[in-house]
Structures are given as structure tokens and as C-alpha cells.
Length: 197
Image 1 (tube, helix red, strand yellow):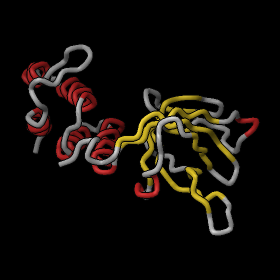
Image 2 (cartoon, rainbow, N blue to C red; image 1 turned 180 degrees about the horizontal axis):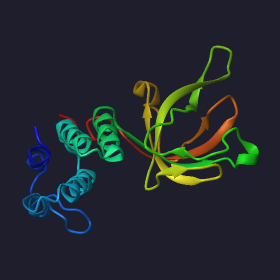
Image 3 (cartoon, helix red, strand yellow; image 1 turned 90 degrees about the horizontal axis):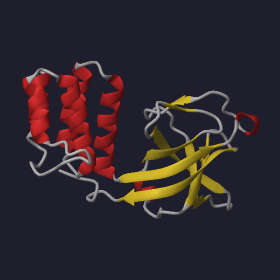
Image 4 (tube, rainbow, N blue to C red; image 1 turned 180 degrees about the vertical axis):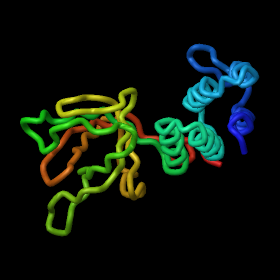
């Protein structure tokens, strides 16, 4: 399927009354599609997808369109949203330790590439903290470096292990046994409240 048809198909999955903070609606997307402004149409559809829960097929269709346009970060974001639609959303405010106090010396790509370990309250049989793996998406920034702070989204390897998290809870990030950063949970939305098919 070609890009315009993919974007049209995704548009049909957005309820007509959906509008962004800037009053962008599906009608605006159709205007850009008629003008062959596919990139703008894709960006607006992503924004509309942030307004309300939409089905996995919406995000899968956008991911395919972004891949065909060779928009790697946009495709990665749409795949991320597929994961969140199926498994729920976990957002946190992350502060990394400075380079002088941590293993990390350089910024990392914020587009869901890093898969650090997290101490989220689980313990081993000997009482030591058990670490759980979750990919990390940095919101509103392409990279995050030592000493940096940003809101982030987490995609756990095993979402069932993260069900106990609550807003305000503090968890720690690890790239080895030492603490690489500290995060305060901002939002937890279970599957079904994050949009499912």
C-alpha cells in the first residue's frame, strides 16, 4: 500500500470530534493529504493519536507509512505507541547522575534504543534488589546525557512485573550495579485505558 493510502486509512480510525490543543482535526489532515503534504499529515495524525486512545491498527498503519517515507524516528515512535496500546503507559521524570558520579559519560539516543535495568521494588531470595529491564523513550528531546533531566516513557520487557507502580513512586535506573539515575513515576495507565483493539 502506498503512503497516501496508508495515511487515509489511519485517518479513518480517528473519531471526527477529536481535536488537539491547537484545534487540529481530521479535516486538517485531509487538507494536507489533498495537497500531497504527507509528512505534515503524518505529524498531525501522531498528534491526534496523543489526544485519545486509538487502536493498535492506527499506530501500525502510521509506522508503515513512516517507514515507507524513511522517517526512522517517527516509525520508532509509532511502534512504541503500538507497544503502549497493548501493554499500558508508564511515564516518569528521570534525572541522570552527572558523568563524575556514573558510568555513563556520553548522551544516549532517546528514541527507545537504551534498555537499562530498573530497581522497582522487587527483591531476590537473599533480599538484594532485583532489577527489571525496560526500554527508555525520552520525551521532547532526541538525546539525554549525564546530569540531564527529562520526562521519559518506559516499555518493560515483562509488563506484569511493573503492575504495582503508582504515581509519585521513586525507582532507580541502572546500566550496571551502580545507580545511573533516579525517576519519579508521573503516570501509569494499564492496558485497556491506553487504547486497545
